[in-house]
Image (tube, rainbow, N blue to C red; front, side, top):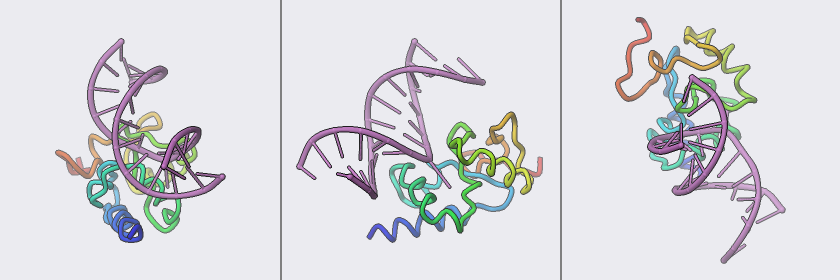
Length: 102
DNA sequence: CGTGTGACCGTTT
DNA sequence: GAAACGGCCACAC
């Protein structure tokens, strides 16, 4: 059922707390997916109702069409952005994550 | 059923 | 730190 995978990914993205971010790979892993690409496809379809702006690449960057809104929304949630790329070191919600309250 | 593309990832140069 | 290469999975033609 591709819908199950669809919903699982949706839940993983929605589970990201405010002021925190996660990479496509992290979301995919949390959803039990193997490829991060599926996550992108899901966000493209139903991402309209999800905090997709909290999902970035492993580099902290994101696709060109999202950068603008990403920058605005994340900054509005208290996420620190450095030269167009998010500071994963303090906002990444996985692997030795640190509290954003520095 | 084969090919091409994509909101990707990890390693190497 | 940035660019290039290959590999992964799902979808449209």
